[in-house]
Structures are given as C-alpha cells and as structure tokens.
Length: 578
Ligand code: C2O
Ligand code: CU
Image 1 (cartoon, rainbow, N blue to C red):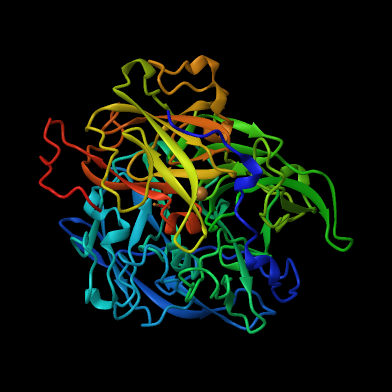
Image 2 (cartoon, helix red, strand yellow; image 1 turned 120 degrees about the vertical axis):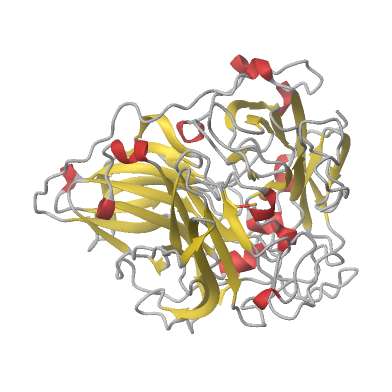
C-alpha cells in the first residue's frame, strides 16, 4: 500500500527536555485526596438543566509544602467540578471564558502557525465533551474557539450554549479544553473535569455509591520552587532554518510529580469496605499501569500484593460483567477505568497505588523509550474499625450489544507515520486509505462515513512509539490487533479470529485505543443510533492521538458524518475544510 515498514528505535522522538528539570522535594502522602466539586445548574433552558461554567485563573494549594500554584480552573477549580447528568435528560452548558489576556504558559507560534490566530486579544478556549455523543455544533472542535466574552470566535464557532443530548449509556465522560494548537497548554494549566452520566439501571445495581464512589483524576505535573507550574521549552534554536522563535513544543511531556484530583502525592483514607473509583487518565502523555501493594510508610517499602481491581466499566460505560484485574490495570492517555476495590481484608493497613508504565513505548524494537517513570501515585490508608458494607458487584452489569462484523460497509486503512516539520521537529501524522500520503490537520477531510453505516477503522502504527487513538462522537468496539507484517490492506475482509483479542480494559465501549508500534489495531464503529443506544448525528468531528503534544502538532484529522444521501454537501456545509 505504498508504506514503509516500521523502523522502530530510529524513529523514536528525541528526549524531552523535561528530564532536565526537577520539581522541588516535597513530602509524600501528606495531603488528603480532595473530592472534585459538583456544578449545580443555574436554571432551566427549554425545560432542561442549564449550567454556567466560568474559566478563571486562580491560586490553588497543590501541596501543603508548596507555595500556591496559579492554575486555570473551570469555575475556578482544578480539576474542574463534575457535571452530573442523567441518561435521557439533555443539559445546556454555557462555558464562559474569564481567563486573563496572557497565557499562563509559553505558547509556541511555530505549530501550523499560518492557520492559528495567535494574535487574538485574550486566550482562546473551546471546551470539548470527551466521549460525548453530541451534535457537532456542541462538540467543541478545535476551530470553534472563543476568547473572553466571546469577543472573537473561530471559523467553526456556532453558538454559546452547548447542548448535550445524553442519549448514550451511563459513563465516566470528561470535559477538557481543545483549543487549536494550545490544547496541551490549556489542559496542563488545569482545564479538565469529569462529566458523570448516570441512569436508573446503574443505580439499581447496588454498586458502592455516595461517599463510597470517588472520582480520581490522575495527572502528572512538574513545579518550580515558587510553586508555579513548570512546562518545558525546547530552548531557542537559531541554527535551524527557519529559526525557532518561541518553541514550547516538546515532543512529549512527562511530569515528575503525581497529582490526583489536584493534590500532589496525596493520601486517601478509606473504610475497610468496597469503594467505586472513577479513574481518569487526564495526563498530557503519560500511560498508567496500576497495581496496589501493601506499604510500610515509615520504611518506604512495598510488601505483598494488595487487593485487585474489579473492572466494571471503561470509556463508554459499564462492561457486560466485571473482570478481576490482579496484575496491572492499564489506563492509556485520555482513558477511564471504572473499578471497585474491596478493602475489607486490609483493615488498619496502608496500600500504595503503584504505576509501572513505561509506555507509551511498547512493542518490538522499543527500549522503554523516554517516558520518565512515575512509580508512586498515591497511598490508601484503610481504617481499622469494622463497617457494614451493603454494596455489591453483580455478575451481570449491563448488556453490551456487539456491532456485527458481517454488516461492515467500509474498512479504512489508516497509517500513522513519522515525518518532520519545517523546524526539523518530529511530526506524527495520520493517513487515509483514499491516498497514500499522510495528511495534516488542514488537508481536506477524507474520512466521510455515512450515517447508519458500520465501518472498521484499522490504525496501522508505522512510527516508533505507541499512540492512544481517539475518535469524537462515537464509542467503538475493539476487534483486535495484529503485526503489521501480517496485515493485508487489499484483503476483502480482516479475519477477526486471527487477531490478538482485546484486553479486559479494551472490551465494551471505547473512545480511545492504544495502538502499538508495528501493529495494526482494528476497531468497529457504528455511526448512528445502535440498538437503542447513542444518537444520530451528522457533521464535523475529530479523530486524533490523545497525547496532547502530538494532537497539537498535526496528529489530528477531521472526519465528517454525512447524512444518508449520495450528496457530500447535503448537510448544508459546502466547505471541505476544517
Ligand atoms: Cu479528549 Cu479530541 O479529545
Ligand atoms: Cu501520538
């Protein structure tokens, strides 16, 4: 298909300069994990709950030994407060930009700069509901940005009040900024929060709830001595042609400090009973592989295994049945894991949440790569007094109807390749089966599924590192993966039986999937309402790598769902450009 074989190590991007910075030494396990706030509606619009969420710059104590950190928060909170919604009950949200005129972090004007309006008065934002099955005018696409008081708006900005239809299975969704070319900086500054969609069926299952259901937003950050956020710059390079004027674009970012719900190296106090944790990997690039160990805090040593994770859901909602994960719980960038942990056998003990992910570098020819390890995430202190625990995890959680492979209308071969930009920086690009050359963000849209079609998207990773691939609008099902050398893009149909099957974390409904180097990962997607789940939507959406540094740097493409008609432009949008 006109593609070269993966070359592995040679294509691994060079070391990020975050390795040269060390955050101040701060005592671990000092502060309690805070619970993110919850936003209350301010009224009704068309009979539905109406929210107003203001983005503001605030000072926040990330750690008791650190001076306050200036962050950007939704409603002035980092992470943002959770929006609690019910399936079948739409909500409206007006996202208001009250941020200062200057960016908190160094902006890099050399990323597809001809198209990015770096000269706006005030900072551009656009909130995206990640995992939201929403109409495209409420999706928060990168070109729908707006500045303070909506003074200036992007080419695809259409309205102030976003409408979330909530016609999808209950799930741990999240919202975060998606502004063109500065997503990594806006999210790093703090613009991310949870959106919890619930329904009566889920309530009736008897899972741990109320104070025993705890969201955990996992992120990595680095700090300066004065408490401010550290984000690396690549340093100016006057030798490159053209010279790099203000380069903050590192190939990948990895922070050296674990931050959970906005607290650095925190501790969580629990009772000896079952808890439900809604875990979000909200880091820019980092992957997490989590496991609990018994922990001796004074000696700082780990002992034997702690309790396993019982995985009950992931990106798009509950799994059909729970899966016990004794080994590592993998949570790729942007993904969610809905787990129950039973602490009843650990009364009076302390546990360490340990992370051994060296990904995103996995697969052949990869030597562990340049992800800085972050082995310690948080500790959990289990109280010693006995408690009553009426909660349970039923054997059947929900029905997850399978998208039938024999009804596929189209298979898309989507090669991911390495290149370099005008400044010689590594550039990861997404291709299309329509043409063999890779595409940048602004090339005309090539992925145009038709409403109510079933498609297989086959991501072929020809770069030297793993990438977490994300699609807006839909939740897909993972079919499996195979070595690139065994994949035949010309074949009539892939042989699903011959693929390496999904991991437990990849069953059910996903919106991000890990694609390893040298592999082809196949997902099956239904564009429209499926078995009474999800809604019919047409229009413009994005698919991209969820490593935010990659996404900002052209590893993002539009797709467009066409109405059920032969005419490309029957959705009333005659342009073929983002
Ligand atoms: Cu979580 Cu397009 O993003
Ligand atoms: Cu990537």
